[in-house]
Length: 146
Image (cartoon, rainbow, N blue to C red; front, side, top):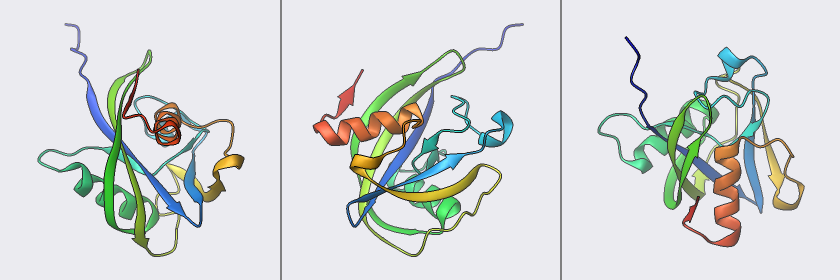
């Protein structure tokens, strides 16, 4: 019997501090990078999958805390994207925040090997496609990119 494929819902949180954006490097190992969309070795925003009965903001707070130790005070939805490849299909909710506290720590070293703040003009080349779309949406002030 063939397994039915489903669309997932996830989110990426763009954290901006002193005009720099926080990105984490995914593990090179596919299993450890922990994404159905793959993306091993790429740079990504904090984020994850939306859990049952959770608001976008609650999910963002939970994932940012679990992955970085940062306490997210406020976040707003800035975009929605349709991310799909040969491995998976996700609707990605992009959120933005400048309202947070705490220092970044690598709390899930198996998944994300390092966190780093990047100036928008000096972003790495290999950005996880869903995170790249959120950054593009933010830059051109678009809510949706196909």
